[in-house]
Image (cartoon, rainbow, N blue to C red; front, side):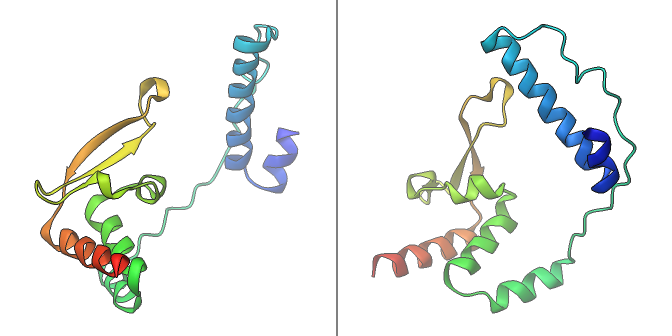
Length: 140
């Protein structure tokens, strides 16, 4: 199956599937008394050719931001000035924005053990102003 996936899609796709199957088997060992020998550990990784990720130049970011409207404009600025992950940004609440102390809080499970924790990041004035304007439009 993994060989077919590697041939039809890519070695990278097959390696991701192998990783997921290995994790699922380990879950089964832990919770469903599956055999302790995980067969996916023995599968060798498939060769892969990774393409470099395209990162647009900053001037292109500002062009997109200039034509964006409303929440999209604020969203783009928040991505730029915080470096937050998409799911972290989409789960933000107003309680996570501390304008008085110029901080913004992001929650994540990307920690050892998967516990839900947060970090406060500095909130630069330009982003704070955009958030305040967005909040005013929201409450009108």
